[in-house]
Structures are given as structure tokens and as C-alpha cells.
View 1 (tube, each protein chain N blue to C red):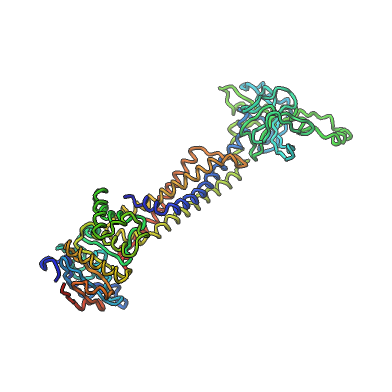
View 2: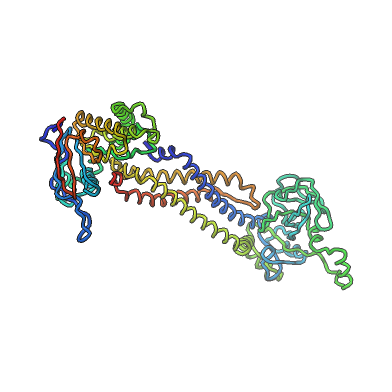
Length: 239
Length: 377
């Protein structure tokens, strides 16, 4: 297990199930998925289309409830028996979870700095503080020279780094990444994954990524396969 | 960080183009309101010009504007002697087509008695008619200027004064001449026709006929009471100024007024639908961004604020463009466009309300966006 202590899981899923529809139309997207992810770990979720990867990511991201089971986020039980225990999930996402998207999903009308600063402003940070932190993050991710560029002017790799900076802005404990390297060539994909590993270790964050990109499998500490809604394998890599 | 402003700035060209389009539409709405108001004001202008309290016309008619009216000229003396009347004057109205600088000029000729009620309200340039024949005060909208000479009937008139905004309900510009000149113009026959009348033995009839007698009353006299006296003892119709204005607006221009009013209402509805569609489309184009904003923790008020602010900016800028456009070109319309500040203000409030209501559609769509759509499948 790479980094962090095993005593305090940042994400703990306990027999999470999720089905859509009822009767003949019922689809079991997830079946009793249990998973603990610790600080500093970089975890991959693999699986064919429709296996439940995105459903699992949505549940961990607190944007989709489960049909049954329980979930802890950073030590706080937020979901039990398929019911949210915390009323303000938006605030939970803002404080604890960062998102990285397949196509970076930067806000097109904000420059790189403001895309990052936006998250801090939403969390109530002062304008100057937010921009200073955003600038630091962009420098940290080696894209500081593009801080004033609009997303349309950024290359795929640069845009994804800005997106990572945005995901890190509020110092989240959990980072959820949906195909973070799918839009990148192999060289840039490796750079991005190295960055994520660096972030996980330095900020003691847990990173959970849905990916199909075999070239980057060696960058993950643990690799889980989802098939027909079941978590089938846990491959641990030694660093 | 104002997201609405940033989005607008990012797509400034497209946003401004949309505002210009909306502005043109709102300009048309404003122009229609102005034309509507202008129609009413034009209709009342001639009736208000003599600043009188009573109109005495032919019995059982609602003349001289809504119906034809002919009464003997000496009625003026009889009216002037009625208790409560301070002064009275005979007037005639007729529409003629004259030729001026090679073009046809349609004129609304008003004949009045010098020094008596019925003349032009205010001379904008030049002077009043001083001679008893062949002088004319013309409205500026005729295109005539001081010193111009123009033939009406068999005589040439010289323009000695100019008025402003004196047109009849059909939009024809008014010219004022003396009553005798107007009577000659209206009732004198051409020489061949006169010979025919002589041959028929009917040429001796008096031409001292007028269309109406207008009267000013004492401040404490009741127009209704004086009108009743005229009706009872002189066997004529008498219409108070208030009733005359009502006839003009409710009867003479009513159909045109309602037509324009209905068209204006339709334009307002079309504008509202277009504003709603623009705002809805602007929101739908941003659904992915809205989903991302929601996913990263943006509260609903941030998203609602963005949509509502953009809707209001669109409405405000469009309205400003439309108003500026119409205020600057309204004088070039062939008929008067009257834009009162309250008309502009009311349309502004309507646009504001329409933008708010329209943004509700976009807000509804935005609030229904599932943040999960920001993540791929």
C-alpha cells in the first residue's frame, strides 16, 4: 500500500448496491461493492462499458445515491442504507472532493487562473487569495506560463493540468478522475499520471480514476475491475 | 467573479449581435407605440389648435371632423351673443391637392376669421396672416418655407408664417388662410360651372357658408349648459371640446388606433417569445458547463444569478439600442411618432419583466441539469 496509514480510509464503501428501474426493467449497476481507499493511494477502476464504473464514481462523488449499503468520506458516514445522512452534499463536494474529467471540462469563458480560482471563490475565499493560490497551483503543475490563456488556447495536456489544478484548489482529500488521460497522447498521459501520483503523496489525498488506458496501469497502486456491477479484482502494485 | 459578465465578455461579438437584433425588434415595438400615440395626438391637434370650448355645427351631425357640416356664416353672430360665450369664430376645413415645385402637395386647408378663434395656435417662424387675402400660414411638414408661393384654386398664396405639428387625423399638413379665401376656394365654381349655374338660375345663392363655429366661454360658464342652449334655441348641434376630442379618438381614428394597438400587442408577444427563446438557447448551450459548475460545488444561486443577469443585460442593452435608434430616427417617419417618457419607461418595465419571466425557463432547465452529466459515461 503506497502512502498514508491504513487506519483512516478516505473512502470506505460497505456493500454498496445500486439498481435502476424495477421489475423486468431492473438493471443492477452495482452489487454489494465494498472498497477502502487510503490517503496517498492512486486507485484505478477498470471495466467494460456498462460495468458500473461511472455509477460507482457518481456515488463516491455524492451525486448519485445508492440503493443500499453505506459510505464514509474522510471518516464521516455520509450514506447508510441507501440514504444520505448529510443534507448539504454540494458543500461536501466543494470541501472534500475534486473532480478531473475526460475532456477537462474547463469553463470556456474563464482563463486558466480563474478556472482554478473559481472553486476557491465558491468556497468563500477572497479574490486575491483565490488567485494567488490558483497561480501557485498552476506553477506547481508547470503550467504557470499559461495562466492567462483561455481554455480554447490551451493544448490538451495544458488543459488537463489546469483541470487538475482546479481539482486540487480546495485541497480535497479525494480526487475522482474520469478517464483523465483519454484525450492525451501516451507521453502526456504519463506526465499527468505522474502529477497525480505526486499530488496523492504530497497532499495525502486518495485518487480514484476510471480508465481504460493500459499504458498507465503501472502508475496505480491498486487496480479494481468491475464486471456486471461486481468488484472483481484488487491488483496491488509495489512502488 | 461575475460569471455572467465573463461569459458575455468571452462571446462579446455574438452577444452584442443578439442585443442589436433584439434592439431592432424593440425599436419596432417602440415605433409602433409612437405611431399609435402619434395617431391620437394628430387627431386631436387640429381640434385643440383653436383652443375653444364649444363647436357649433350643422344640426344632427357630429361635424366638422367626423361628419360633413355646413352652416350659414352668420350663425357666428348668434353664437357670440349667447350668455357665457366670450368670443366666437367661423371656420372651414377642406382637403386640397396643390402643386409645388413639380410635386403634388396634399393640404388640409383651414379658413378662419382674423382676430377670432380658429386660427393657428402658435407661429413657429414668420408672422400671422395680416392681410385679408392670399396670405397663408403653413405647417412646417408641408415642406413650404417663408415666402413660398403656392396656387390654391384660382389664387396664389404667399407663405408668411410656419407652424409645427399641425396635421389632420389623416396626417395631411394644415395650412391656414382667411375665411373669405377659404370660402372662395371651397364654394367658388370654375367659370364653366358658374355659367351652367347661371343658366340654371341657381347662381344667386349665398356662399357665406362655414363648416363650424367655434366659441370660447367664460371661465365659470358650463360648456354643457351653453351647448344645450345652442341645441334648443338655434336648432344646431353643439359639441363641447371634450366631446369633440372623444369623437375624434373614439370614432374617427378608432379603427386605425385599435389596429395599431393590436399590432403593437402582437409585436410585444413576439418580442417576449424571442427573448425567452434567446435566453433559453443561451442556457441550453451552457448545460455542460452548468453541470460542471454544479459538480464542483457551485450553489444554485450562482447558476441562477448567471442566467438572470445575462437575461437582464440582454434586455437592457437591446432596449437601449432600440430606444436610441427610434429616438434618433422618429422625425424621419412620414407620420408623427410621439414617444413620451412614460411610454419608454413602461416598455422598459415590460422588457424587464419579460426578461425575468423568460430567464425562468432557462433557470428551470439549468436547475434540472444533473451534475453527473459532467462526467462521461
